[in-house]
Image 1 (cartoon, rainbow, N blue to C red):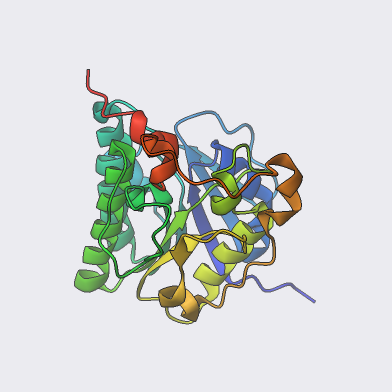
Image 2 (cartoon, rainbow, N blue to C red; image 1 turned 90 degrees about the vertical axis):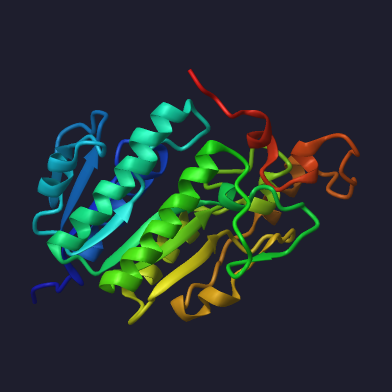
Length: 270
């Protein structure tokens, strides 16, 4: 019996990045063809793949990239604080080009890899939900706020559905105490993306990408319709950071605010 896949072609941008490499094989069951894109080298195409190098700031190239695409996982762009000129090209102009190409190609479902740094200036004592104003902790965070607003516009104007996934910290294991709260396992990330793509209707949804950790900063009640239930937790790494009870130092903004060290990294201008 021929296996039926939900999509004919999924585009994943940022395929050469850390999460792109993790997702590359895991998203293959969802489409007949996975089109992988990045500015960096992605190696040779494997079975069921198309590899297309593309600069997101190049409008014509992005328009061509979207041909024949049914759904988009947008992980492209700069993923840390950087000089604003670079962020402007990759994360702001790039996402503007992407959504215009999505509109012209008739794509109706997008997952935008946003970031917890869109709300990094909330305190670690706050519980943040999707109805609360953005409070970016960096120019990188500002660029993610722009992407969230742009995707909202394209939903209201053209009906393009987007899930803005504010990813916490998706690594094999937490590398500091902060990540015990923001940890998002690879398995939970993949399942969350599956829910984002397959939910019957998502409209414009802002969801927090996080596992079922003991510490909680984010309330996902406005994304309940996605049907995502985290199965992993950072508790299995408790031995890495045994002391989790200390209060934030009065003058240490990296522990007072959710954004951590991102609050110290910018702004950067040339």
